[in-house]
Length: 447
Image (cartoon, rainbow, N blue to C red):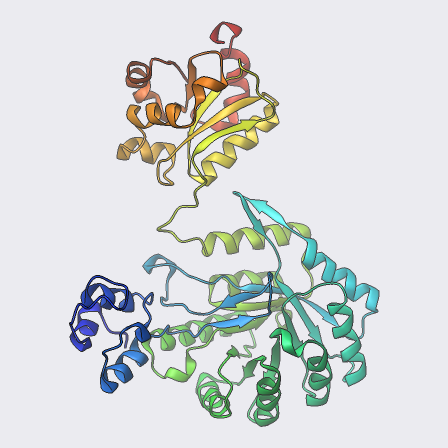
């Protein structure tokens, strides 16, 4: 079981020496309990404490890095069963499948789709992450050619899928030093597959029919010296995946048995409804998720779902406070006050761009709170508005002194006018009505 901060504190030397970078041993213990501290930073731990704390403070789900370079990604290092308990740290990677029976041009086209495809949402670039290459032909030469076709157009994380060690060796000879994943070792072949993973520094996906068998297999593979492991739970149905993945995470969080503390691999093509499998894998602990096809709408929905699940619920997505331009606003353009909660900002920005009204957006620092929440919490107030107008030099950008505030901030209108000396217009509550509001309410006399 994971130790609480006070339990960890009892095992520390209590010198408060600050050599770990924290002011006290208790602060250091709290960091360890939250999984954010590094045990090695304490130079005075005895061997017994190091052994006990080492087992209890490491992440319950081990971290595995896949690929190298800019598009590499990390999975695992998770601490909780449910997102609302804390947060999920590392979002799953989506791998688009190709086979070695496809023509090289077709393979390259799919890889380019992964390489260049991007969807921008609330200021973030959302993409597929890599390529899964299947050895359908069973021929090592054709598999190597397929890996070469992938490598010829992009440096993306890869999963090499084959039951043939010779085919995997041929593929690894091309991409092995770029930290790919090998699928899949079982009780029959784990020695050969572990040897390949060690030789090339690759991650190894294990496949077993039950969690008990998976626990035994992971012990065997770590005994062979391979520690970057993922689990293919080989479910026969979505309900089996749900049950197995949930139990694996529960065992991992409870640290009993420890050999189950690794990320989960899910090949959605094995199910009758791949899109339902994609959703389930995102929601329930899938870390590397393979799909052979995604329609454009399904891709957008999937990327959005992943972003929502893997956004820290305690840290709203924020943008930098400041004065932003929509179009090329002149001195007489309207100034609209908003907050730095990303969803609010980008929603308003989208409607303003659609309205084709050049204007300024004055974004106040409400620590990521929405308009309604920040008004209720007192974060958005007349003092903040006055400070924001001065901090971002709005006076120098426009020739008027009229500020449009959100409808939900209407109770502040009088106080803002008194504090800032600016005239206030109360805008709509719904950003969708901003175009109509500007057309009717923004008059030349305001400028």
